[in-house]
Amino acid sequence: MPLFATQLSSPDSAPARPAVNPVGVILVCVAFLCTLGLIAVFSAKAAYFWKQVLGMSLGVLAGYAMSRVDLEYLRRHLWLIIGGIVFLLLLVAVPGIGISVNGSRRWLGLGPIRFQISELAKIGLVFALAHYLALNQSRMAEFKRGFLYPLCIIGAAGGLIMLQPDFGTAALVGAVGVILLFLAGAQSRYIFTCVGVGAAAFSVAIWLNPNRLARLTSFLDVEGNKQAGTYQVYQSFLAFAAGGIDGAGLGQGRQQMYFLPEAHTDFIFAIVGEEMGLVATLLTVAAFTLIFICGLIHLRRAPNLFQYLLVAGAILLIALQAVINVGVVTGRLPTKGMSMPFVSAGISNLVLMGLLVGLLVNTRRAWMRSEVLPGSRDFA
Image (cartoon, rainbow, N blue to C red; front, side):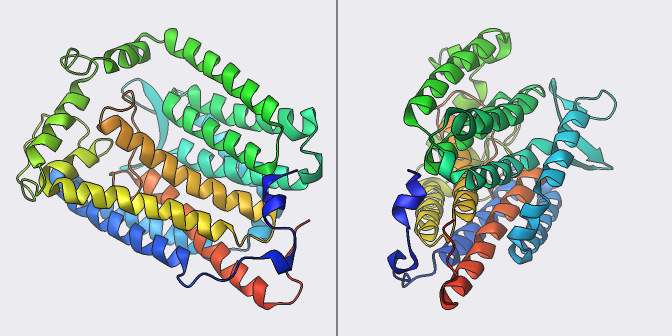
């Protein structure tokens, strides 16, 4: 029995309308994080400030478009959209077309602007899984339709991303996909077996890649490997230590001055800690926590499995990416290039985050409207 169906089985069982609009709280948190990101990026690398403004503007436009679009219309044309994303993922791998940076070919470029196609693959996977699992809601106990076929969708997306190679994003996509399978009611024994096999395969892939293996082993002793694989993490430790509770002051940090590579992208959280102190870092973590909690509250009003899984996927993509970024910067997880949502510099991720927030706004409006119309909640 799908978890969703056990929570909401009839219009009468819908939860009472919360006193506070959860999506409104999410928007406030997003505004805070975006403002923090602009300040931190300007301080870490002023040359990227206007590019960050451009990325946020594109994110707002993408979010507004997503908030106004008919989700059922998108659903009817979903496989055309997915086909386009797959084509772009394959195009990235073509030499001379895909842009290679530090040995990874992940971007397509248009003049000075580069876009990471795997960001589109994230939301594309969520739409594809939500559509498929909703269509097969009554057959989730079956091995093929309830587990194997959706697993192939997840594997195809993760496999194309790993070819770039981008192990971190592939792992994120796989984790979100498997959680959505669980929420839709797939058999637990299949899921646990899949997780075990996937972890083994992922370990083999890392073992066969010397650079990533070195990252993993050096992570076990950050200070001892500070001249090699954990240099960035060690420098982020120094940034947090220098910031203390109150911070060194805006523009007064030292780590962005050639000590901490990628300070404006993957390690922007360390700049926040150094210049704005412990209070700012705790507020950042609190903002992401609020986004996750309010997302769960919003989920309780979902009228059908398709939209339930869409919103669950959006919340997971934001929350898990934030957890990974904070875990890496604080040395709790092995080093992996993963942007902090809404804060890190990077047009691609800002556009993705805009789409995800727009999806939350879209569903909030639609769900409130459906509750006003008698018999409008569809649980098929």
